[in-house]
Structures are given as structure tokens and as C-alpha cells.
Image 1: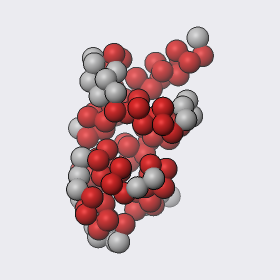
Image 2: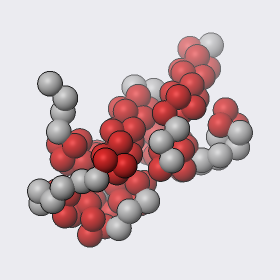
Image 3: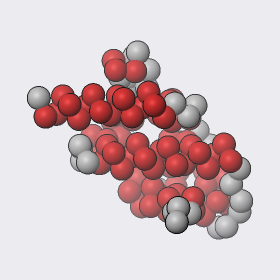
Length: 110
């Protein structure tokens, strides 16, 4: 059974230490995240963004401490053509993000 989107948002809020951090990474307003946490429905596009952010975040935490994972999300990445991973989360570029994370993992074991 899939994990509910609201549960993912709550976990991200806990890991990132605020709802505003989740909102910033998703590119939505803070009030929207608050409404989602209070049970308001989430549209399919933003639900997919939450799913992708949760996937990327959990993958990064297997490699890095939270602050380094956050820096990876916000920094320019050569494996992504000098784009920021967070921008790819917002546009739903799952495969590109996962390839970049796999490259990070390969580099960390090299």
C-alpha cells in the first residue's frame, strides 16, 4: 500500500525542520503546505513533486548528512548540466535526478 502524500509531507517537514523549507523546495507557498498538512486535497502535479522530493531526499540521506543533502539539492550539479537538483524536482525530472544520485553514489565508493 502506498504511503499517503500527507505522511510524506510530514516526514519531509520533520527532516527539513520546517514546513517552509518543504514549501521552498517544492516551489509552493508555505500556506499551501500548511493546508495539505491540515487535510486539504493535493493536486496530482504537486503530489508527484512531493513523491519525487521524498524519493530524492531519502536517497541523498543514504549518502550524506542532512545539511550536505540540502546543499546538494540547492547547488549547481555538473551531472545535471549545471542545473540545480531542486529545479528538476519542481519539473518532475525523475530519471535525470536518479542518474545524478547514482553518479554521486559511485563517486563516494570510488
